[in-house]
Length: 331
Image 1 (cartoon, rainbow, N blue to C red):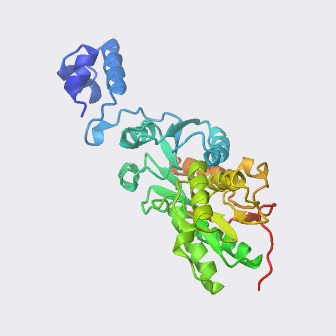
Image 2 (image 1 turned 45 degrees about the vertical axis):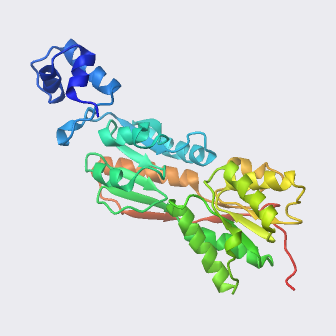
Image 3 (image 1 turned 135 degrees about the vertical axis):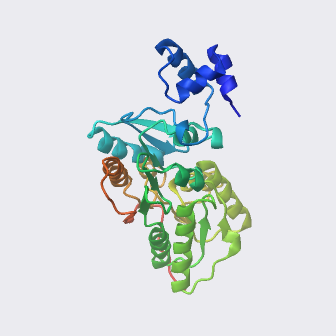
C-alpha cells in the first residue's frame, strides 16, 4: 500500500508537508502543493477516510466505466451518453475495468476523481459502487440492479429478451435448442437464461445439459462453444447470449462446413453493428443501446443537479429478423 512517506519521498518533501497538502491547509507554497499532488496522483495514493478524496470539486467530467473499450456493445452505448452529458457542459472520460481493483475505472470510482459515473462494466464490484455512491458522487449502473439511494439502475428487459429469442426459435419449429452462456457473474446473462428456460417450459421442452455451454461474451468463446456442439451432436438451433459469441459460432460452423441456417439455425443478442454484415446476416434481439445511453446520461445530470429520479428504468427488447434462422417442420 502506498503511504504518505512514499508520496513525500517522490515529491522530495517532508511527510508533514504531504499531510498539510492533502488536508487542504494553506501554509504550503503553490509550487510545493503541485509537486505533492502530482506525486500522489502518479503513485495512485488513496488516503483512508472522507478526507481522502483528491478530486477537486466540480470537475465537470463524467466517467463511463467499461470493461473492454474495443467491444462493439460499449461503442454503441457511449455516443448516447456523450450526447446527453455534453449538452449540459460536461466532458466525458471512458475508463477500462480490465486489471481488477488496480484498473483505471476502479481507481477513478474509489478516489472520486470525477463528478459521477456511468458503470457498464460488469466486473466492477457491487461493494465498491455502493460504498462510493453519494449525493455529491451519483452513479448510474447499466445491466445490473443495485439498491442505493444514490445509484440509479438502467436495465434492459433481459429476461423477456431471452424468452422472446427462444420463443422465436420454437415458433419456427425448433425443439432442440442450445444456449451458450455469457459469464455466470453477469446479471444480464442470468436473466436471458431464465427467459430461455421459461420459453422451453411453456413449450414443454426439456433442457439438455450438454447443450448449455459456458462463454465469456466474446467471439472466441462462441467459437469454442460451437466446436463443442459439433463434437457432441448439433441441436437444430443455437441461442448465443450475445452477438460476439454468435459471430464466433458462425465462424466455427463455416470452418466445419456446417451450413447456417440449413443445418443449424443461430440467434444472437444485442444487434451490434457488424451483425448485419456477417454471412449469413445474423438474426438477433436489439437492445436500444443509444436510447439507453441517452437515458443514463440525462439521469446522471439530473442527480448531479440534486433532482429526484426513479431508482430503476427498464427498456424493451425487439427482434431483428435476418437470414440465420430457418423454419423447420414439426414432426
